[in-house]
Each structure stands twice: as C-alpha cells, then as structure tokens.
Image: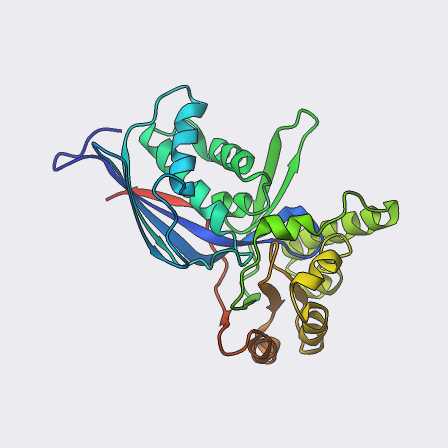
Length: 303
C-alpha cells in the first residue's frame, strides 16, 4: 500500500463477534453478530499497543491482534513492519462470543491490506483458523452471516456463508463469570459413540436447511446437542434448566454459545420478550442480555 501524504499508512479494521457450535455443530458452525471489534493499525516506526474495552488489557507483546499481523507477513515470507495498534473491544472476554477469533482476524486482515491483498479473504480465513485452532468462530468473523466450515481430504479448510433470515431474533445471555476455552475443552471426552456421531451429523445438516429455507421451526431439532453441551453443563450452573426454559418460552434454538458460558437463543418477534426475561433471570443483576443483529464479515478501510 502507498503511504498517505500526511503521515504513515493507517488502517481501520472492524471484525464482528461470533457465536459458534450452535448446539451440534462443534468446531463447524457459527454466525456473525453485530458487536464489532475495532482496530486502528498504523505502520509506524515502533511497535505500540493501546487497548480499551472489555476485560483487562492484554500485554503489548502477547496481544492476539499483533500475533495475527505478524503471522500474515510470515505466511508470505516477509518480515512484519513495526505497527502501532489501537484496539477498542466491546466483545466480552472468555464468554463464548469469539473475542480471540475477532482479534486474530483483525490482525491478519490488517496485514493483508498492508500487503495489497496478497492473502485475500480466503487466505485470511485459512490462516486465522490455523492460528485459532478451529474454524467455527473464524469463519463468520471473516465471511459474515451463518458459516459452515470443514476440512477436505487434503486437510485444507473450506467454508461457505449464508445470510441469516431477517426475521430471526438473536438473544444472548452473558453471565458475569468467565469460562476459558481451555477449561471447556478439557471437560470433553476424547471420543463419542457412532450413534451420537450420526445424530450430530443429522442435526448439523438440519441447521443448514433451516438457514437456507428460513424455516425457524427446524431449529427446535437442529440446535439439540449430545456431543459437547452435556459435558460442559457442570461448568455452566443451571444450563440444562435454562435451555429447557428457553424452549418453553418459545425459543426455536437454545444453545451454549461457543465454549460458553454465554447462552444463545433464536426466536421470532412473538417470543423475544419471553426469552429475554428467561435469560435476564439467569444472568442476574451482574450479567447482561445482548440482542445484536446478524453481521457482515470483517471490513478494512483507510483512515
């Protein structure tokens, strides 16, 4: 990219929060929500890092935005330039809304823009997914909407995005306590039965049908899970009862968002108030209920 006439190159990157797994789609399904991380990246004389937003600020050396930025340059065989990063983060940390994926995508996308688009959006997706270790949050952060991601025979990741139907209401109950992804993954067994694998595959496929046709009623079945939620329930007090209460209140989908502890619900206008009340009672006075709409993928502009 060419230097701006009034100073060093400066980029504005926005990346959406994401909700992954969606019940049975473990490490496969995700959707982008309109709560956006903002990063201003300036190719400057020295590395610098400033942070504002959710949680304690990460260290200058250990922040994921810079990690993604440096990894993108390494991927094309170049040394990364010094970069000053200003991060504004409204995404709750360690709550199951893709905060780490958003940061990694922001760094990779900023570097790709500085490199003149050498990676491209698909390359940003593949690199950020490898850095994150799984594609379910990275996919919607990159492409927006509802995303299905899978590995091909050669090990390469493939992802496709579908628009979320306009009449779907997205609600998230965000409790006050954090749940690190590492702890949530440690609770999972190393294998599952053939019956559970078959059931999970069928429900995951039904998610795609629900989004493609706009049929919310399919989510009542599509969002049920036997692979990871039962094993993580002990880490999220009241999870089983909450999911049942949400369905009784009219939620079409009710699920643990990502690794948790946030719980997501999808419904229509007719049940949104009742579902909101259920989530508010569960998170209590120190938690919060978010109602973001679906979102587009990351965007990069000069500023």
